[in-house]
Length: 147
Image 1: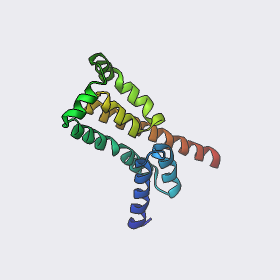
Image 2: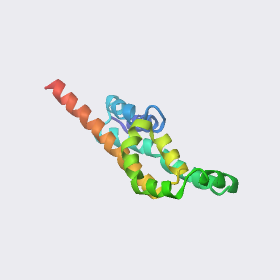
Image 3: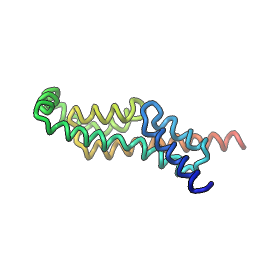
Image 4: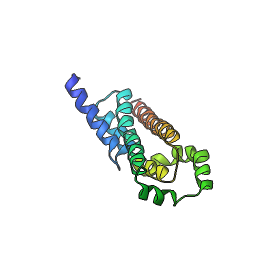
């Protein structure tokens, strides 16, 4: 595979990972079907699927500079809930992200007051773990079927 062909396939994998409804579930198998090696078939969709998280964190931080928006958002949660979210939210992020989607999880977590650091870390771990599991499942399935 030439460089231009690889870049095209990597860009397609990134875009599939980036857009809602495709995300990791479609992007990893489609990347393997495109002919990317397993590392690339995981790397590009994970990068694409993780990209919205820093963008959402940045957008939320910018919105919080507007006093009216800040008052409205901070009035929707309690200190007790924010403590709970920052203590146990990482488990929620790890488990829920692949089922609900990273766009919804990141926006909701920030709106409810989860700190940026844990959100970035645990969403990346979740995306990577599920992508590796999907790629491993495909590899095992192909090996089983081809004998």
